[in-house]
Image (cartoon, rainbow, N blue to C red):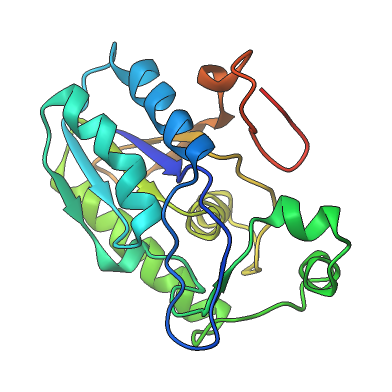
Length: 207
């Protein structure tokens, strides 16, 4: 089967004194999600899953409409900082030379209640469960950069870490998965749908 892990589109910045930030998509993010759905419209998608966080659900919404699917929410593909009171797009942190950006680069920034090992374990368990339910199919999962990192690192046999690469907004990461348990990465950071759009793609790229 073919698994498509899709990072959410660009959300708004949200910083709260208390509570969970869980931001919605920005105007640019909504446009990114529409282009993503248009790009995937030529492919047969058998099932659509999403993280419960709003930015992932809103990214899934146009895919669901275009393919006549119901989005299934899977709690265990939520991001590692799901309970954080703030969400600041990493591009803004970098542009401001924010101390949080420098800490992230050094692998020191952690706003999670989970250890990296626990996070990776729940992500792998959840995604492998999705794979098992759809032998021979094509499935999309809208999720988060940390989730994409965790699963691809697992497939590659890399050590547990906070992230070994940067997934772009609405990037598609395809994994071929066999019934025998074999996993093979097919594409990483697929963002052809954002080219020449004028929309942000990621930390180093503009459409």
